[in-house]
Length: 390
Image 1: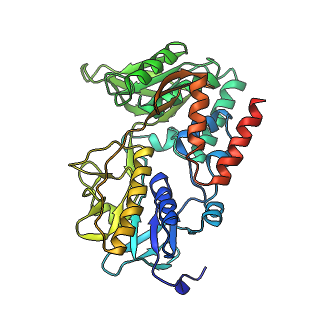
Image 2: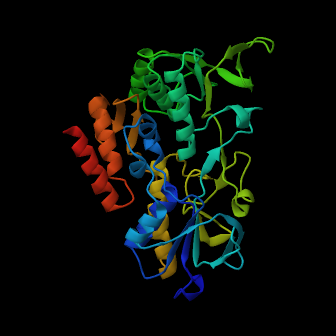
Image 3: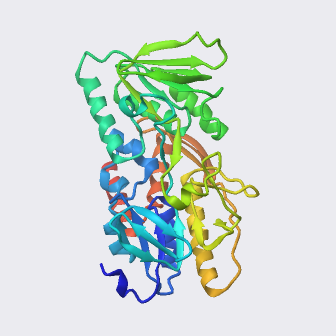
């Protein structure tokens, strides 16, 4: 694609997660003819809340991870499968890994976060993450090994009892059919510390029905090929627990994806402080969206629905900026929370309902279908779901 023949400098979005893709969709809905370029080093958009169902085989790859090229063709944006190595704010241009220079009129940075394996020695070598398709494939292979071999008797250990850790614990317990125990380890004094109380209660019930052991107020101190050592934060330093394990999943630490403009503005909490319009005051034509940002006067959690709402607002503000109109402040509207709690089971608080069980699982599935990034994908996935019910 010849970027030099574009009719005008494009609006460029770096990062194709929920925030970035939502920005692109909202810009296209308000299109004034300006080219829109999405840059991401992955070939696929990843609907991360449905990774658990991909792991269990309840959904297929095409439902959870559609190709950006197909979305670009249907929706009408330009997709570059590249990474950005440099952003020149003064010249309003960026350089990609292939040394392609892309000029922009406005820029949206939504590069997100990735699993941080630097927090404990040995994580890179001995742990599984759960943030991409390769992670899912690796964990599937582990599950197959456990189910097909009598050599696996030690527990699976999961670090982190937030939504990812809890949802994984329930799903894995069902998938290994209680052949091995699941150990859930967290520094906090309760699981799902930031979740809705109803969902937390239902998660506790789901855990109690499975071979899952919870170690609260514990942290991972070390890991090697065979053993994990974790320690109670309230006991003396020489008192720790060592166990042999069949697999270790790390969900307890995240860090921003590397990009020079992101790195230069990170604070001590590895976040970028933005104003109420999701900008840094120095660069009015650059917006920051998603898990990498925080705003002192307008606090919001890190979640997919926050990133999507920020994407929609950012698109609106970019159009306003181009027309010389006033920008709108970001105000997060909490639409609720949905948790996967094992095969065919879920818990929902929000959307006007409070519900748990198989029906909640079906509603959760349909709610996410409504958020798919293209109409044809939603229609195809809905047809697949309806066919499976017959």
